[in-house]
Image 1 (tube, rainbow, N blue to C red):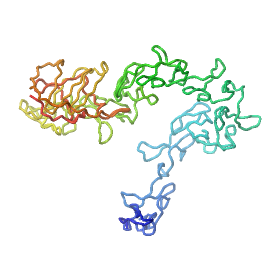
Image 2: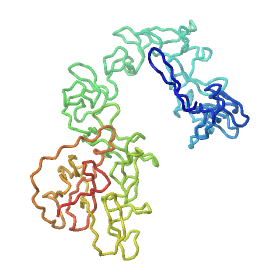
Image 3: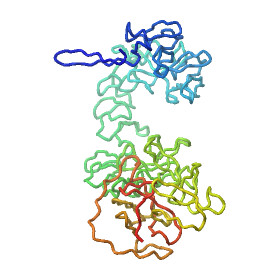
Length: 553
């Protein structure tokens, strides 16, 4: 029965019901009575799944697929706390003492008690986000609930207790709201406490200077749109002792319409332009913005501090450990940051590094993207001539490396990369990859261009060099080559290469756009003088795997 499928015929259709894996009479004799029963081998009894069953207090009885039988565990969202092993939910008081809360250990399996963070007076510590909130404010709570200290447990909670929050309680709905905010009121009124009546009410008075709007004769919540135009907020000026509408933060006024628009967005501008402050102006709420042509293209975004375009996913103008990424608020502006979702995130130090650079790796390694795991790893930098030996260490080609005295390490074959030891001076020439001489990086001095073909692509400053075929080697005419390369025979006429689809764009890119390995570099024909190895794939995708084409001689 454990493997059978029950079929029912209703309305001309046949429906199949697939039983759960524990419905196997051999492993679970209790399944003959009900699919919801599990066998307990210790006393041969049957218990309903996902109940306490034969387990201890706070535990649940479930099916263990590894053991193939019923077992006990903590319910989802709860952790066992030693020494009792009882289960408690995270961020609750649990078995902890006063001013302590339960947190999950780094192993993710057990709980431990931690002390509250010290907060200013009239503030409450909220363990879930490690933040202090003002007493009787909404804080992290849902609408209609306020944060407070439970008088019985002494633990912070979100709730609406009429006895504790009488000055915030709205009897019509049984919910609680902050004073001087809109709360449950209609537009033009705010939530107030009437001390004379001893109850809350929705009202407005010209005597409430901080919230009264003379033009509309209404009261509105501060720092919200209220009676203002789009892009504006309702504020109180303590110097003028009056309320006014001002542009939101990171917004500026557009003179023709009088409306406020977000800076570094298209705003009211024509296509291909963006809305920014005039040169020399400081960001503020009373300034007027202008429309300027947007200077960036492709995967580049504008950086206001340097007035320069940088490619997303690169370090660009950012400090070490951060990458240039999308600004969450404005699509045309980039910002420096590092999050766990970024390609290039290194969990060991909680920092982000540019792919193709050294990053947190050793001098012989490069930070690369691992498609299998979706993360990054340190691999041998074959561009510098380093390959991985059988001991998982990186050694430089044509040096002794891990070899015996009188031998050097060479490449036996390039697909896959297989190093071997050979006597020094012996001839050993596999299908060699391209050799590359590296110059000083120039990515921040000139725009970076990227062109793809059916082979390998390199870029240097304002030039692009492409290896067009499996038997072609390209050397730019203006390259500063230290040794004279062999002449290349004239190539046969061929059709122009097909352009490959562009790489991914977004916050950071794991494929072509982030593999800017060849900045300030040029190709060199093998067999002239020692250089560093560069590799790529014939399908045009940059890769740390060697290119196994036969270069022309």
